[in-house]
Structure formats: C-alpha cells, structure tokens
Image (cartoon, rainbow over all chains, first blue to last red; front, side):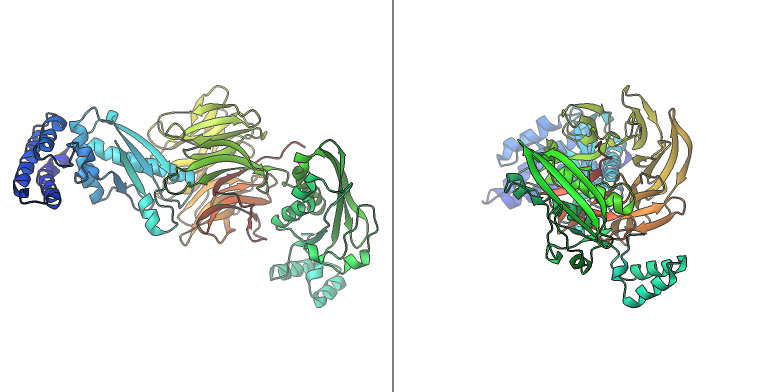
Length: 192
Length: 448
C-alpha cells in the first residue's frame, strides 16, 4: 500500500503527459491546441477520481474525455494503447521470479486499476523459456505468476480478483532457440 | 562383454590374445583397446526375408529385415551389415555358402520368410545361424495378421538380442509422446498425445487438443496412461484407458496438477499439486482419491518418480536455490523417512527417474549451459553425461534398462533420440514424425 501511495503522484503527472503526447501526434489541424487543453482537463478529472478512491473511474472521467474530443480513444483505459495498463507482460531473468523495477511500475498501475474496479478479475499466467525440464518449468511459471499476484496483493488488490495459473514452457511467444527468444518467453501475462 | 568382435582387432592383437588364452588380464587389454577406437558393436547379417507365393500388398509396406536391422543398430550393441555387403541372399532351408559369409564381418546370419496362409494372415519364420560353427542358434515361427507384421519384426529383434546378449530385449514395446504442430501464421497450435512402436512407427493418436498436453506416464500393466491436459485452460491430470479411450479426471485441484507417476503396484500416483500454496509432492490412492502430502517446503518440489520397489520417491527440488535431485522414503501411510540429496555435481539437475534395477537414475544435468542426459550410479554418486546436445528433456529408461529415450532439439525442431546407458553408442534418432516431438515415455514390457 505504501508503494501505491508513493507512486500515485508520479502516475498523476505521467498519465496526463502520456495523453498529451498522444493527442499532439494524432491531431492534424490548427485546432489541436484546444484539443490538448480539453484532454488535459479530462484526465485531470480522472486524476481526482484516483485520489478520492471512490470508484466511478470508468464512467465519469474517461467517458467525458472521449465525448469531448471525439477521437479514436474509446474511453476504456484497458484499450488505450498509451495507458500504463497497456503493459500486460512482465519479463523475468532466467530461473528467477524477481520482478524488475520496470515490471513493478507496470504492476503499480494494474494494482491501482484493480483496486478501483473491484469487479474486475484478471488471470495471471506464468511462462518460462524452453530450457530445463518441463514440469520444473511449469512450477517455475507458477512461482512467477504467484510473485506477481503477491505484489498486486501487497498493493491492495484482493486475492479474489486474481486467478493464478502457469503454462510453464508450453506456450512460447517466440519459437527460436536463442537468448532473444528466451527473453520474450520468460514472462507473466496479465489477462483481463 | 561377449559381443566385442575380435575380428576388428589387428592381427598382432589377435595373436596375442590367442596365445594368452584369454586370461583375465589379456581380457582387460582387449577391452581398453576396443574403447580406444575399435568398433565395439557386434556385426550381424540380416538377409531380406523372402516372400512366398509372390507379391502381396504387405510386402511393399513392411520390410521385416529392415525393421530388425534398425532395431539392432539403435541398441548400440550391433552393427548389421548393409545390403550391399551381403554376399548372397539364401532362402530359409536353402543352401548357404558359409565360406563366403566368413569373408564378411558378420558372426551371425539371420534368414527368414513370410508366407500368406489365409485371409490377411501370414506365417513368419526365421532362423539365426552361427557363421563359424554353422549351427542354428535360434528358430521361431509366428502366425499373425498383416497389421501385426511390424510387431513380429520387433519380437524377432528381441529374440536375437536375448540370444546374443543374455538380457531381455525391449524392441517389442511402445512409447508415448506429445507432438506439437505449430500451425504457422494465423493458425493455432495443436497438441497430440500419441503412442507408437519403440522405433517411432505405427503411431496412434490418444488425444488431440488446442491446449498443451504434458507428462504422459504409463501404468505398470501398460494399459493406461496418466497425463496432464490444459484443455480446461489450466493443468488437470487425466487417466485414460488406451484400448477404450475412456478417461477420468484424477486431479483438478486449485493451482497446478502436474507430473503424474504411477507406483510400481499401479495403485498409487505420485503427483505435484500447488493447492496448499506452492508445488509439493503428494501421493494419491487412485481408487479412492485419498491424498498424502509428502513434501512440505517453501520451494519447488516436483517431477516425482518411484523406485522399482515402491519404497521411495526421487524428485526435483530447488530448496537450496537451484534444482537438485532428492530421495525420500515412503510407505503406505505416506512419508516414511528422511530426505536425502542425491546430486551434488552442477547447479541444475532435474527430472530424474530410476533404472529398472534401481541402481541408477537418469536425469537432465546442465553442463556449461547445455542441458544433457546423464546417469547417476546411486552407490557411487558418479554422474555420467551421455549426450552432446544442448536442450535435452524427459529421459526415460527402456524396461530392460539398456537404453534411455529422451527428447532433444535439432534444427529448431523437437525430436526423439535413444542412447545406450553406458554411452557405448552415439545417440540414435527415432523415426521422424511431423511436428515438434517431446516428452517421450517408454512403456513397460508388453504381454506376449
């Protein structure tokens, strides 16, 4: 929980910044200045909702934002490619279930979202690279998924919102037999 | 080893040995010399079996002599003559020019024939002769249906093997394995659990799924397979009757349900469950479903395997930080003794299983970043690495304990290989099956 409180201010600053960037790159005409301001305002509201911790995240803030500027952005943070929630894969070192600093910051965003959306249940799926034996890797994948679940729980997500499972080395995303493929396969996927 | 052929030794050595009348010392010299570069496999001639009453459809599909040749070669103990090395192709009961055979490397000669004796029915006869004494060493006759001709070939391989090595052959056995077809872009992977003859031929599908299938384990009577399937989106252990295809769920607990291994009496299953927090070894009584917890450790404990006497389990545990093999005594009430660590060499040893005589275990060990098949002699604690490949998995003993079957990777594809337990032959690749092949499990002996 402490971690969440610490990272909140950072998130409040970075999220609007991200949206800023998205807007300026997609807008084409001279009206983009106004768009940017609108957008900032909408995410600002959104930020207040965070602070208050009183739900309504989905309906009010984001919905308004989408209505205001009428761009591709659907209003669902889960489908916004610029949201930190779009990071759904956490990568690991070989034979390790330590969550990297990068992984932690992504998970902080998920922890926050899940805390604010208590009905949302996610599946946390652990995977390994192909090296070593399959059944050991199945257990290792579970240990990674559990490490992610533990991190989210420590950040305030109730256990009921998470399903932990492992596929070991059975579902690789990269099929080559080299370090760059192995890096991509040593992962935990968050499935909404 | 009686099989070592003195014909491969140079003349000087031959004279020396005959002079010493094979005293034990001279024998030791002989063995060292052989390992130092002489061909150690026993040369044997298998003449193509002749088909009576002309052409039949079976003849074009099944070359019995060829099946025997590859069986014997795969064992590492025999080097069958190539077809162009055969000086003649005598018929069963016909004249044999032994003088011509003496000029080959072969010491034994196998000849046989196949006669159609009814609707889809064949009689297969063979005879093995000693080329030097000209005496018959073995002769058998089988009457079978066409679809059993391959099996007869394996049974003949077993007869030859038994006659010449004095241990039981394991060619007339089955292997279970998983095949993955990656499907290509836009297509989904398919997983197939299959059973085939010990040479990889005659494949039969046991289960097909879009989701992973893992860990096939034979029941001791060879009639059932336990395995892990993800068809429900997570790992569940099933038990399937091979003949009927009937199956039941054995373990579907919260968390992992993994690594099933039948006890030698077939009544219990060792397995890995994480229902109590993390991967632990349990024993399940199959008829009642009663569970006994064996390990209790905040670490990964998995890949259990029974000793042949059913009194202990070996398993992989990373309780010291890296996976190593441990042994624990069990009885009908569950855990019955202290834990003993078995592997100390290297920082990755996993997926161990016992040899049929219980004196060795085979396992995967990491050597300079490569994962290889090794054996460990339990009394001596000596680890012997048997392969040179880098991504070996799932080593499994033949029921006669003479060979180890395992999965490895070649040119980006999963393949099956077999290697002699003493490392006397180079790994032999099994019949190429389409797709990635993995997780082989060698069946028990089949009833004859």
